[in-house]
Image (spheres, one colour):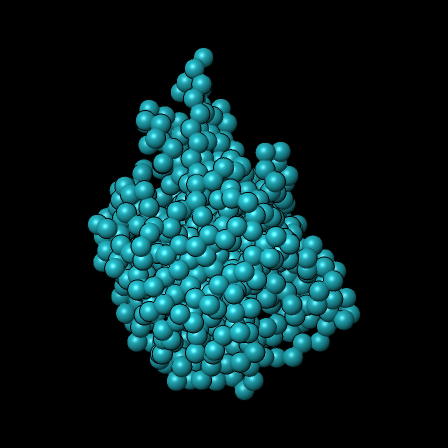
Length: 429
Length: 154
């Protein structure tokens, strides 16, 4: 029987390990394997013997795109361990910082990584030749998010101002106010983004996912809440490991997360949105409805619309926080180490990041566990391809390969968290 | 947002917890210790769109990154972005969904490329999770620091 192999180095044009393999025989898919590598395993070992206050800055280096998410989960876990409650003004500023990260991460993915898939371009550079205004809008939107992270994070690119208990230094009131004008532009640009992506040709595809996200009594989730799912899970963060388990799979260096009671699940924008639509601000809900979205979204290709809606929300929420800003008396609260185990889980742009630390009486880390969103979505991405490929098996191989890549990009897989290269291999027998 | 943009910007790119991937960051730190404070020196993760912002408005830019092109480890590649495209086989080992090379080319398409933009790519050998540079890459650091300092004098 004739066998064909297609290899694509889609991120880096170098030879490396295959990250996605799709095998087909006639009209049937016989295998789908997604391989990811997991720096968190290295970091878990690296953190042992370090002090609690080093965890936010060390784990921030796991990812160049979502350092804030790692810092936040690490801080919350340590504060949980030491029984510390963060005052409301500091809590609000953490939400503001998270807004900045969501805006920059979502704008990057929507405009530079995902939109070319829908508009039929190989990459954003080629797309920018025909759509320069849209690309410039995306870059400016991203910059508005960066401005928040730069201000609160203390410097450009890698934030260093976050500490267990709060911040090292709080910027001045006027510095926050100075962000507002651009954020008003950004909110309008984000609404425009929703309108733009809603015109994209979206494949007709749906799955009955188990969505998992944080849920807070009255906020769209960033830092806090219970872990809930669309199939009835409702637990405090500290019970995460009683319900979720990481399974070793032979084809991947990584561990795949599954729910013990059931199986694969989905984290990230689709899950957050579908479990928390009622917590979005009116302007974000309106943007979603005008784009034709229901309050639950089960089509992963529509994640580009949901990400854009979340960008509207993040701009809107950032403006609300800046408008209500009250200078805290102190930039941080002191913490007292004790023998303990702390749990933290926050909503990175790509979905929940879970941290757990066991500490001694001096606050030295005895062991650490970090579960990033991409490893949690890994099995669900494979599941999408098991269903998507047979429905499109007649497509020409180049086109099918491209569509498979796009299906993986629906999850905005965090390349630095999960893998060096995403290479795709399709074999037809 | 930074109100005043210095005209010279140096950006070291990479992840210091990925062994030789961090070479750009190491060079940036050494340069910071030697160069006048009016030269802006930044450390980046390599996420390309941030680079566009970092060099926006600058007249002269130097980007330092690890390379993984198959050349012998320690090899120093130098590209003048104003006259040539950056081969994408370079400079996109680790993070880099949108790499240095792509950031340069996107800037070019949008007519936002700084007048002078030099990219140094230092060939690494070990990109595994871990800290510290390979000895041969460490040697290249000294070379590049000297070259950049000399280049900025002229």
